[in-house]
Image 1 (spheres, rainbow, N blue to C red):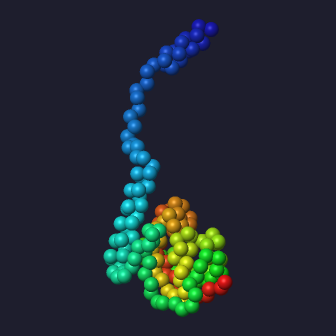
Image 2: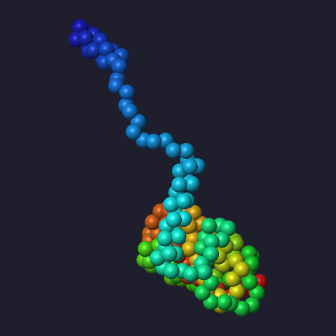
Length: 165
C-alpha cells in the first residue's frame, strides 16, 4: 500500500512540474498573402517560360493565362453550350509531355479544366493556339496524381476541329 501511495505521489509531482515552453519556429503568414506570393511566383515561372522560348506576340488575358494564335480558323466562333471536337497536346513547363488527346465536349459544361474552356471559347474551326494556363485554372492543387505534379502550370497546344450548335 505504501508503495502505491509513493508512486501516486511521484506521478502527482511530475504532473505539476513546469514543462519548458516549446518555441514555435514556423512563421505565420496570412493565407491570403501566401496565395498572393504563390501566384506571383507562378506568374514569374510563366513569364520565364515565354522569354526562354521566345514566344513573340503571346498575350496575357484577364484570367492570367497567356495565349498565342498559331493558325487562324474559319467559320463561327465556339460559344459556351456548343458541342466541340478539339485536340490538345499538354506539356509541363520543363517541356516534358503530359499527353496528347482528342475530345468531344459541350463547351462550358464538361468537367475539363476551366482554363481550357476559356481558351477554346471564341476559337474557330481549324484554329490552332498555344496556351499557358496557371495551375489554378489547369489541374489545380493536386495535379492529376499521375503525370502532372501538384500546382503545375501547363502548356496546351490546342486545335479546334469542329463546332456544332
